[in-house]
Image (spheres, rainbow, N blue to C red):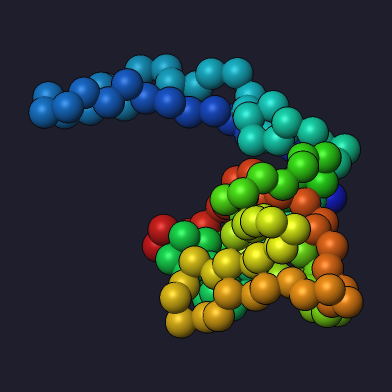
Length: 135
């Protein structure tokens, strides 16, 4: 897990016209620097990143993706969370029903985890964004 740090990147947003091509490359598209904390992270001091290993949340969040996790958020039904379950970290969709917690994979090839009394279970944070390669 990595603490999120404030790094500025150049924000580029060309005007893209449907059906009429792209604007001239000579136009100036550079805008203010992009602050990832401002753009993606609501609570920088309470956020960290994790690289996903495994396919249980694929294709929503594939193996190798980076996720931004916010520890300050209270998980709600349907949120994707980073949790510790019986000594192992896991990334799953969270559900709560009648005093029972569930950790649900997006990939149907994996079983849903029903958290039972006596199981070690702690939610570390709620996933707010995922970053994944498209190539």
